[in-house]
Image (cartoon, rainbow, N blue to C red; front, side):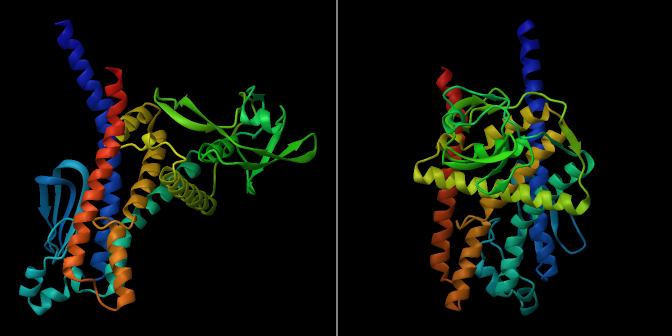
Length: 382
């Protein structure tokens, strides 16, 4: 009986503590992404056959007055909008069906729209993700506020990058590589994504400004949720003081902050991926659906605001990944349209189909690699 009780508690914790937060966050992000495609498609006069959150067999849905089937699939790991003339959820053209359509139906099909309209529909999904992230960050600093702590050095770890660079207790960091530092968290996030490269610090020391060069050192640390990650560290810390204040932003400044945070996440992600390709970053830090689900559950234990922050970060990542120039992804379609704009005509059906197959293989390989990274720590335990 004790074993059954323990098993039930473990399953309940997994469902409520991990899977449910993950599905809530992912569903919102996917819905917003697909809604971006949908709204611009409708605006461009494209007939939408289906709007699905999730893949596979439909478990619930309805058809609206314009013939669009809104549905929920049994596999909630993505979604799609299927336009008239599409052969699949990846918006590959059904050339046989297009040829059999009447002139009126062809005029409403996605693949018969102008190049600019098709590009706008495709780009709308990732753009919607970025707008969602900006909105979340702006909402948080408008309603809750942002806790600002003076970026002062209270402690220096012996042998650290900060010690080697000549930092002193009492230094106040004013800028890093020319970027103004107003809060200790600004310093932390820039150092964390520095890829171990040299950074130029300007600090205020006893009323004077001093320039210091430091190269953060990689170290395995706890991310706060019990997970071990390799992170670039400077080696300074800030003690709790009463100078931390929660500052609420006005609408304009809040939106600016949202844009700044969204841009930082996107640029840092690209910088990290470039570092992986160049061999400077650890590819094992790439995570798949299992790690994202675990992180969703862990972040949820810190409250709704923390989960909103995580959703904003994930939304940026999904929007960015979808812009990669890989056929099957939005960026792949935009790549085809760019080539079409240069050549004055679309690529042949044979080349496009080959590209979609290669793109599918690349996406599957990336998913397998990320999932392997997720389960490898669990395998190593045994």
